[in-house]
Image (cartoon, rainbow, N blue to C red; front, side, top):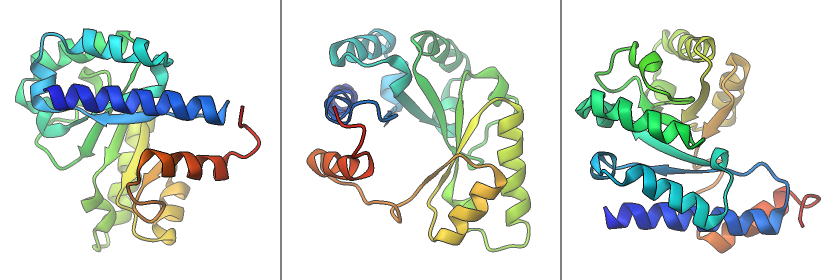
Length: 195
């Protein structure tokens, strides 16, 4: 739990520092939530204080939960997520399509984003495109944005973009890197917005 709180604090502080350096660039940061964090009574107040301490706009801070984590205790999860959503943060359902959750959970929980699991992107069967397009369309009809995970080449990224997928996540676009390297990369991408 302490490690999870530290990860949230560090992510928020890093984002705040990058925002100061870059200016008006539309930056946000996502943090994976663990099962231990989710059941903590202090989670909502922890998130509130992390955001306040870093002086972040809540919409710039996102939490990601896997389907299996949501399924562990759906009633408690719905209650906690509703309180987190009231803070104004983003909530993503990670590894979408790989767990045992019901599609009704997409309307029951206050997620604003689904992250399509890499296994669907990597699928080589003829039904791949139908499944991906269906997931993207369904998410959009429910008012959710879509991230596709594990894109392996530019043709996949283009295909998903043509399907309406707003975001892709992939080592193809950048491997994990230390904060100073992130800042350098951001400065290269947003040279005119720097404060």
